[in-house]
Image (cartoon, rainbow, N blue to C red; front, side, top):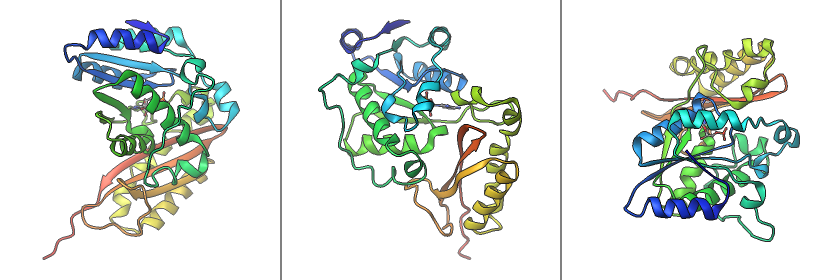
Length: 288
Ligand code: AMP
């Protein structure tokens, strides 16, 4: 695996290596890699000529300075994991490389309101920072396919919208969430859970798994309320539980026939913020 720290170096290598039309699959990450990340990197390798991964803890998408400071950075371990997953190139820039003083790297995109809901109001500035850095990374790497996790459902929806809005020649590949054996979605933040919260955390996915069945019997608002009650009863602090249209992320009062929905949840497990989601489709309403 090659490791490049500067834009010039990675671009020079990629220009040479893709001159006969070789295709690049790209996975942007913030490091502290786990099997969730590695599933994206292996898939990028299987579906392209080169699997490129970036590790950059992007300061502009952290609205909480403590969260940025506490973000784990086990780079030696990450490098070993990337090699084992078949990664060809790691892009490992520092902050000055990505945000050179005096250079405006911001991007104007119509996100169609996708950034105004759910995580948007809870984490002011987060999506602006995320869109800016992913746009900059895509500009540098110029991949054929971009691999992102459905674990961060709203994030991949926003990047899909950015690609459409800016007519970027990149295919977004949303990848399924990889979970621990007990159902907890893998996340770099899980390492910060106390033993007590780690034991309780699988409840998040357990309650999400009841959504589809409950929606057959109850209204959306009553399903949302009972999920919130289940989580609060276990002492999670619920930031939101919302069942929304899977495309627009807008609230829906009732499901229409064959409607794609997604139920998204953000909770505090002690001092660790966890998110998860589950998607489904409503049944076809019979017209007979
Ligand atoms: P992060 O390093 O947290 O920014 O994540 C980098 C990429 O890995 C994002 O596209 C995430 O959605 C994805 N990712 C994180 N956790 C998981 C998981 N448990 N399963 C699948 N993809 C994941």
